[in-house]
Length: 94
Image 1 (cartoon, rainbow, N blue to C red):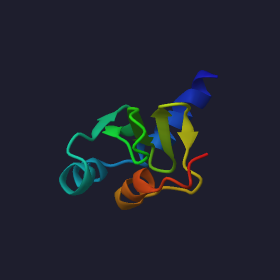
Image 2: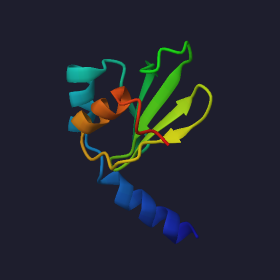
Image 3: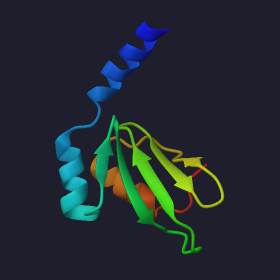
Image 4: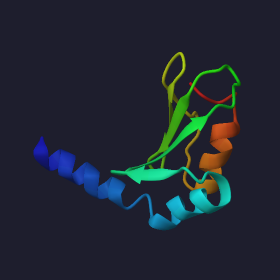
């Protein structure tokens, strides 16, 4: 089991680059931060429902936590621009 976990960390490590984080910080969200193998953006709320959401991206998929439930974006998200668009797209979260 430990070998599988190490392999997954190795594969995921290559997905996100510091340039992805810098692009998000400079072009879209100044408060974007990287932790582990994900980039996080907090306090975005495209639904205007008074809740606080945290969006995360692992280089392949986008996730949303908070509000009433946790969701995964229905399409692959492979770059910073797609992640930014996904956070504004209120129709494709499952």
